[in-house]
Image: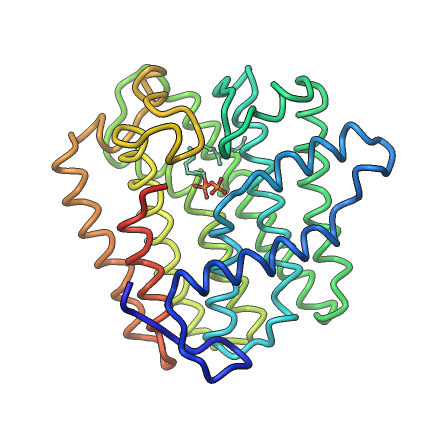
Length: 307
Ligand code: GRG
């Protein structure tokens, strides 16, 4: 990827893959400090949490938060706790999504799912613990003012829960299985299930950086389209990729007759929709009065992702 940018605290210009790798290392180091050790009781729950969190996810949501926060000048250490909290919530959603009562999957992030490895009760509790640890992490973040912590908790709670967040999207998605879904309904499901948390990642970065209301609105539009782009590529990869590449079972959407873009529109139309969603994600960047090379490179990266 040609696009490059300056990493905070360094004049060195680095390409996007290096930014993502660096963000991942920073987030993993911080998560390791924030999450209870496996030796802490109840050890089976903490082992299950760590099994799922440190299984090799892309850390896309925290990386997006860091990229937007740093674009608007926030010090990196003011961003780390919220970035990790988002990854905890994302991981909880994957653990619960894989449960027998939901998607019933046995492969995630390239290894047996949490309930396969630790049993269903421990997987449910590990997910519950990750969700609550996320809010504890922000509530106790001494790098932020109390007012900002409350604002971030409210923002993320709305994006993760109901009626306007990920849990609502998951409920609509389950309810829509094995029946015909119109294009608008599919978009609503995906805006909630996948888009809400990704949008929150962008908004939290801007909020921590004290970005202006106009900048926050542009970030909201950018991250919202990015969420859709992410979901459309996810749907395509389910059809085109191998289990080795995506670390989960491919072809599941079709087998469970899930509403997806390729199922509804076909692969060629989905690729065209992908291109127009990528353009829609980049458009709000012209309203941001800061260098946006990094944010554009992130949109390009999602468009082209193979995992
Ligand atoms: C159970 C409340 C609840 C919600 C589940 C996240 C989710 C909602 C379902 C997962 C199913 C799915 C395939 C969603 C599509 C997009 C998505 C969230 C993919 C997984 O995210 P990645 O690719 O995963 O960022 P990694 O492992 O890289 O973190």
